[in-house]
Length: 85
Image (cartoon, rainbow, N blue to C red; front, side, top):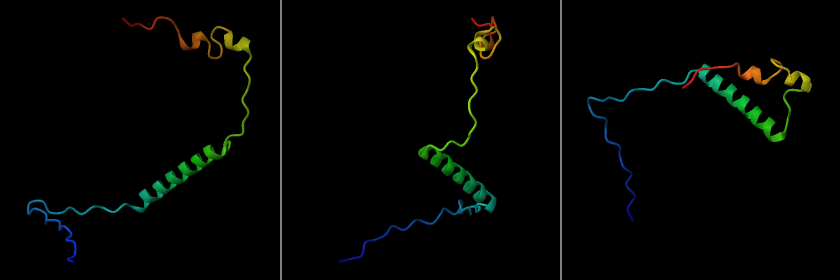
């Protein structure tokens, strides 16, 4: 039997010589490694249920929330006429 023939790439056109690519610098590799490590830690924390911040949440009383101009009240988000059509 005969050997399979592998296709040979044609040489580049004379008016389009091959352009050499620059190598990645060590700094780009370092940043990519750090970003990958941070994503791996974040993924592991999500999968294993780790809590990365140990602060407890404060309770805000209802009188503070419902007072005009208070904590996240209606007037905090809406201050009157905003224009429009």
